Length: 251
Image (cartoon, rainbow, N blue to C red; front, top):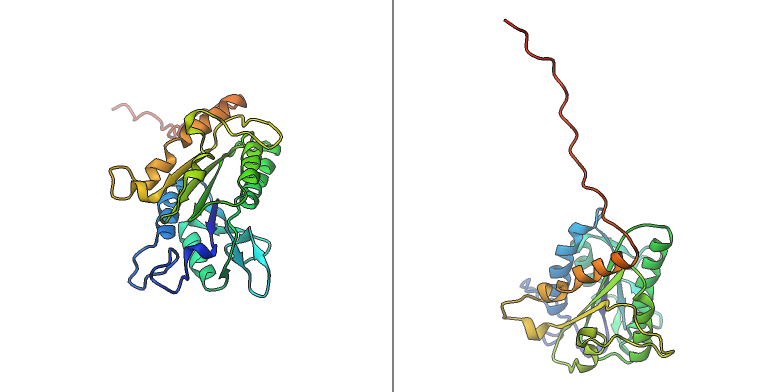
């Protein structure tokens, strides 16, 4: 699952200074780099390679600002096929919406949690990953924390990439790397850490890639969920035995 920030703080996508600028030379912007890097890896863990993809913080054509809209512009179907589908839907959306705001994470996290919850209720041993790519500070911090705490019981991890030069100090509070789990407005504590936040500028040009940094905690989060639910791995599929042939005739 992918959610892309279309708030106005990204800059006019028609200008080279924008974080959403589509370079005619083919050079990828920060959003495209994050989409490509992460989805190119995760798609191989999904049999049908179909991904829910959303945008948030944009004004719809002849409509209000939406904080969770389908990236493919199809009302009843949010899925796209492969990282190619995500990239194509992202580029098309840039030319059909107006960047607006504010920056809210709650609606897209709730949407992802709804999908994960529905799957778990039907006994599907599937695990979901939501990638959020954003350039700025959220304005619904407590609602976002509440959404994450609720989602901590679900088969879901949230990867957040910060692009641009904003102060992402606030974002780090969503990632429980310091050992303090999130607490909701009602006092409920998250059952586990499900968030990994990485500012792209801190890893660009280094030995560790954005994708490596993002996926660093994912295996542990996945295994912790499976252990707490008592879900054991299925036995490996053995190749079928070759057909038995009669012994060669004795000469």
